[in-house]
Image (cartoon, rainbow, N blue to C red; front, top):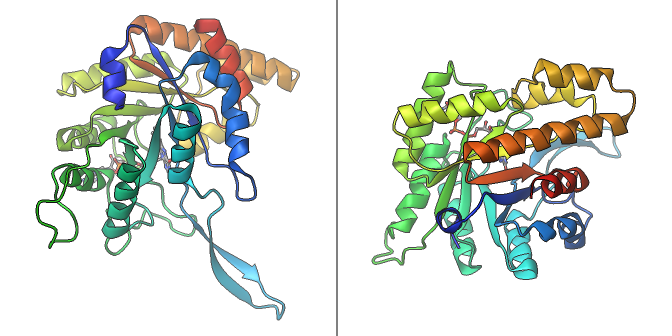
Length: 317
Ligand code: FAD
């Protein structure tokens, strides 16, 4: 079932979760162990992130280095299929431009259709670790909007293989990313919002946001989106703070602000347990306010912290 159908049929605020594929060397059981406790809350869907391969230099016996491509977290599509099969729940694979040619993307979309997965979150992806700026594949997409257009074309039966006539039309529900505090490469929030509108105009069915810790930024973002004619559902992405290091790591990696009240409280905390309690309380409060605001779904990035997310959702449901 499509995310937009879940939303239109909902009687209450929905809950959804996001997981990362496990590091290579672990089995699907680690995903089930992670998700099992959270299933009590009957999530409407589970997102699975995508992680492109990294270029690494491995030292050989003779002292020289060999360039190798390493994928630390493979298996996004397979994990989506496994979760869907195991729990009978909808899954949303993240699909990125980075590392994909248009033809490989098309084959991935065909695989998803064969597996009965009809949702995708379409993203550009970040620059590879060895690049300064994002570099598309020679026959790939430079921006999420271009990938989105490819998915929309496929929905209309237009394939990359030009000799496919009367191709069938796999019907995907397409999500796109939004940034309440601006994407870090955008010169300003307004330009970023206009690029977001391009993605919606190209066919995105809903927006899922980057994490944020200050609800006012989300409320303003929704207002700004509505003001420029974006009418699709906007789903807040939420993450708990659970350790002191995140006070510097999250702003650096995700370009989000941490409100003074929260950063002060965490700085003063004596133990990791205290930090987790502060982070949990903050997220409970954020979630309650967002529900009162009328968000369609509360989407939690579980990222190795299912227990914290469990405690938050238990408190609000
Ligand atoms: P875009 O929409 O293409 O935007 C990228 C930048 O380009 C923005 O600054 C935008 O303003 C600008 N821009 C857009 N269109 C144009 C244009 N036509 N001309 C000029 N500038 C333009 N990354 C992963 O690798 N895997 C994941 O699983 C993943 N999941 C994510 C989930 C969510 C909810 C979010 C918010 C992000 C996720 N990311 C993931 C990170 C994301 O890939 C990065 O933030 C990436 O840098 C931008 O992706 P985007 O889809 O927003 O790109």
